[in-house]
Image (cartoon, rainbow, N blue to C red; front, side, top):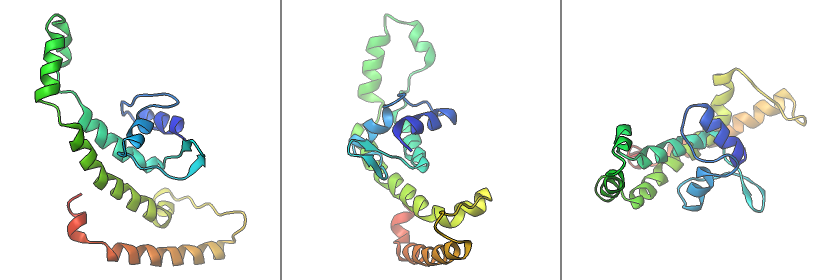
Length: 161
């Protein structure tokens, strides 16, 4: 989906994200924090819906640890915000380091999606060019390759994510 659809999708499930047409996803993508998928046009990136996991995790690290009622003391608020930013918020580099693992988790989920999503949703859609039998053969081959890939993964590394 394009960025506008992703933003709408993420907002609709209750995650507070910035933007309407463009926003946090392109910012995170440009910073190297959020992976993207196929490119529709030269300057347009597409995002798989599973990428909402990385967005959610980034936004969790971006939370500003200030009580909402702090805004009542407006004369002290600017200094309080400076203090919090300097002393209580994680460095931006910490966010960057954390996103690598989250993006790998999403990539693996996207790879496994064709195998498990039809069972999860109860829906199967076929290309107009494939019969059900051809689809099942391709899916079987894909499943074998995906399982081979998963078996080759370093479980010690993956347990850190």
